[in-house]
Amino acid sequence: MSVNLSTDQRSDLDHPASNPESTKMKHLSRALALSCVAAAFAAAPAAAAGDGTIVLKVGKVITNAGAPIENGTIVIENGRIVDVGPDAAGRWDAPVREYPDLVAFPGFVEALTNRGMDRPNENVDVAPFLDVRDSIDPVNFYFEDCLRWGVTTINVQHGPGCVIGAQGHVVKPFGMTVEQMSVRPRSGIVMAASPKGGKSRATQAQALRRAFSGLRRYLEGVVQEKRDGLDYATREARYQGREPDEETARGRVMAGSGWKVEGLELVPRWEIDEKQEPLLRLVEGKVPAFIYCGSAMDVRVALEVATDNGFVDRTTLVLSSSCWKAADEIAAAGVPVILSATLTAIERDPVTGEEIETFVPGVFAKKGVEFALRSSNASTRSLWYQAAACIGHGMEREAALAAVTTAPARMLGLETRVGTLEKGKDGNVLLFSGDPLSVTSFCEFVFIEGEQRYDRSQDVRNTHLNTGAQPENTAPEEGAGEGDDAPDEDGDEDDEEKEDEDGEKD
Image (cartoon, rainbow, N blue to C red; front, side):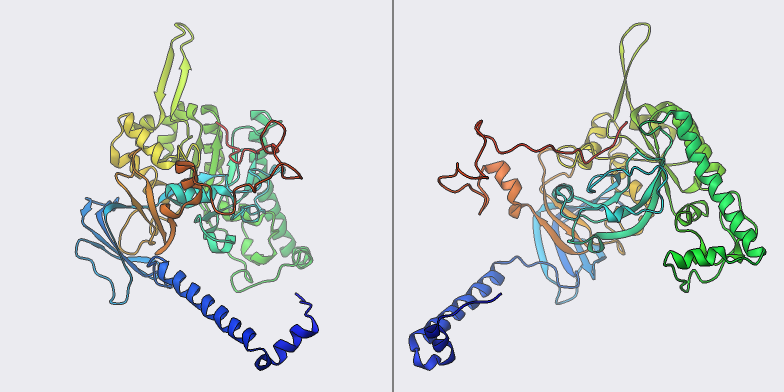
């Protein structure tokens, strides 16, 4: 930035002694700036150390792995919990935060969502070569709401408008870039047994099966080329800009419990077409699969595809509320499920016309099927509400809490990191004003990996909603009414269409 100075001004700067008044003003300005900085640091709360080290002393700790601890202490070092208990103590230089009136609880885990992206689906039917990380918007309000309601681990995946979707990404709701938010990249691949728009159930099932039969034909063709001494795969890989590394420079025998292609060890893995490589990893059992089922009849297709291609052991079904009718088949297959946000299925008796309500989580709990709950929305019906609703329908408290913490953590392969407050787990801690599932309690603080990421007392949007206090620098100026930013004649701001970020369907 260039600044134009007059001759007199330049003279004052070049010869400050010739203008003692100017020099005095400079010193005063510097002193004022330093005092403001010092005041800002003094007013700042004592947060965690720079390495995520902190000691939290609270009125109660609900570990979700045993009996609650009264007047408990949680010690977090380098972002991980190193001790939990009534007598736990951290290192001498660790900041100590005392909240005798608050309740500590592990962060909630969202098993699957397609919120937080600029688009919930892709137009391409089969797109496992894509990655949702390219669509995640770190400043999306969804992630702000997740912090507000205590959801600290989120599995972002494509919605059901696909045949096979992009690779997912598990994130935490904090960071200015996806890399800062990342917990686990390439966290799984979604597919849909229920038909996307424009397809029947038969064509959807056919497209799903064709993707894996096409993978097998491709691999057999590449192996045959190698045996014939051809280097088409090598040239194509280099044309696409791929280069070998230590892991992919050599071929290896095809793994997995399903079908296998003999001789795949002849093909260096870096030469496998990038459009097919994610499906190969899926068939080899190296990544989990999440399969949408919009009705009970879709469950059989989903289980057949997973079984025939050898990844049923790493499959989780994402169900609509009506899929409770296939609970016996799901229990026999031994696969976990992620339930719809609609917890109650309502049908009308075809003879009497009477409405019949079925509490879906209760059905799966009785069948012994592990299930996870999903948020209905990012605020009023977040995971805490869903768990509380299950208790209201008569479910045991432990089972309801597991459905929003430990069960989704296992489905994501993160059970050693999140879901409970135990030694060795990530320092993801929520501090509630009361019972975490009570409608009168609020999440006052959120710590992610030992760093404070949310303070309800500093939540500007929340304060504005509850008290009506106008946030600083947001009030309209006096005399507003002219220009592009003026309200409409009806008194409202210019209306904009709001796209539904959810994109989910039952």
